[in-house]
View 1 (cartoon, one colour):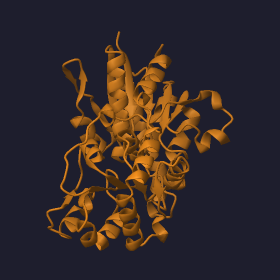
View 2 (view 1 turned 90 degrees about the vertical axis):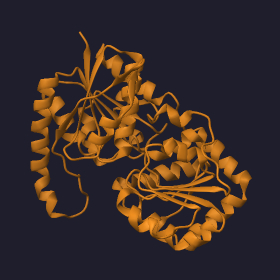
View 3 (view 1 turned 135 degrees about the vertical axis):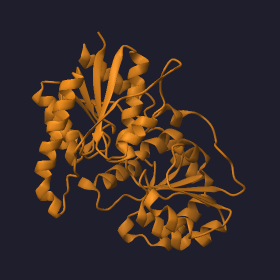
Amino acid sequence: MKKKIVLAGGGTGGHVFPVLSVAQALIDQNQDLELSYIGQIGGSEKKYVSEARLKSGRTQIKIPFYGITADKLRRYFSWRIFALPFAILTGTSQAYRHLKVIKPDIVFCKGGYVTVPVAFAARLLGIPVILHETDASMGLANRLVSPLATRVAFSFPSPEFLRRDRRGSKFTYTGQPISQKFFKAGYGRKHSHPNLLIFGGSQGAKKINDLIREILPDLLERYHVTHVTGARDYGRMKAASNHRCYEPVGFSTDIDALFRQADLIISRAGGSIFEIAATGKPVVLIPIPNAANNHQAINAEIFAERGAAIVLDETKTSSQDLLKVIVELMRNSKKRAELAGNIKRLAEPRAAENVARLILKELK
């Protein structure tokens, strides 16, 4: 009889894409599996899962998607805080019904608020839960799920939360699961000018977009600028310049190709930093200052300590400050090569395989 695994994670592509990488690794290691995905009703994860190109040999694998109600776990005051217990209760009830139908042998949670009701429902049904944490500082959703998990895997070699937790035996370093396409050699499409990539994550970063907009004419005098703006800010940024060296895109499913063609990347410091690490590209990190548990700043600090990134504080960085850093790095190929070499060492090519092996081990 086939073993059944439920995958859960959502909110942004940063939660979903690693799950899909684990799904492919599971298929590669054991083809006698049935995979299902539980995500938020109306969330972006349904689109990502339906478009995933997973394969078993030459056969394309489609993962069925089950939706539940989920709401963000807010750390600031909002009237929606009062509705949160009801959202979690509703989501848990829906997840419970889905799990009763699917009858999985194990549940894998990657993070994001949608995983909380899934983990609660799994615990009620006595289904083991494997959890994976991307960041060096564990997010609120994963902190709620962690006590319910049989095993907890993590991406950073020595994360902050592991040093505080005395139940270290259930914690395992695996690295951050990412698609193998990021590890493939190649240089991508070349331009007549050095290529600067602005990448604010799967949803874009308005503050970074604002900084770039102010210095765009100066940048375009020197570089080809590829700009992943996020869908919501695409129209505004596209209208900022019709220069032939400016290439704004709302979102790209071929972000690995954009990374490979870049001479320098400007990025947030979420899970995408491991994708940048896999391609071995020099990066300037601008962490979100109000990110949950300050996790992006902690991620960036670890990369900076390893000599793997330049880090700028968004609250203290003007557009001219950013321009100065970009110009200095573009002029200094030795420094860029040093950053590229150091960041490459932080990538774990076998991470998805490691997580898949951990899940399969718990199935036995």
